[in-house]
Length: 210
Image (tube, rainbow, N blue to C red; front, side):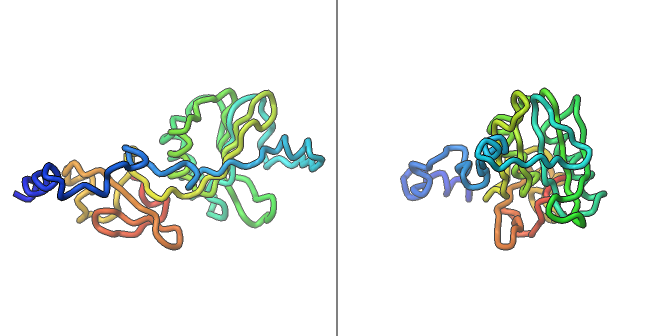
């Protein structure tokens, strides 16, 4: 009965006005909200600000990608666990590796690094997934031995329509074992937390992945 009421309201024009002329039919937020393009290292070198620092265990690659600053400040075990999730979520299998290194500015802080030589599969969709899984990280796209593109990633305002998402609340309608067909959806709230759009449970960005 409730569904019929809503449908009749939509057909008669009493509901749905707030969705007319929405900027993106799929409900996606603009890239500029959470994918920040920054000046590549090569450009800074050309400007006379050379920096030959490389993270421990990482050598320059000719072509590919380097994801840096993953879970900065976390324990080594947590960083490695989350890097495994990122590799699985983005399909970053093949040649390359993952590394836990110390931060350049603070030797007491650890960070994760994923590097994939000859990998060129980071389109806009993949970059958005990476922002959801690793906010605070930096994506470097390497071509001919230099950083051609560099992006600093922030927590997206909304996270949905991604595999392995799950609310921690076992009573939530979106909880996988309920099989209700309600896909997990989260929105960013204060202090960098994510709130389930169904039950209101708060999560960190690492807790929304099963």
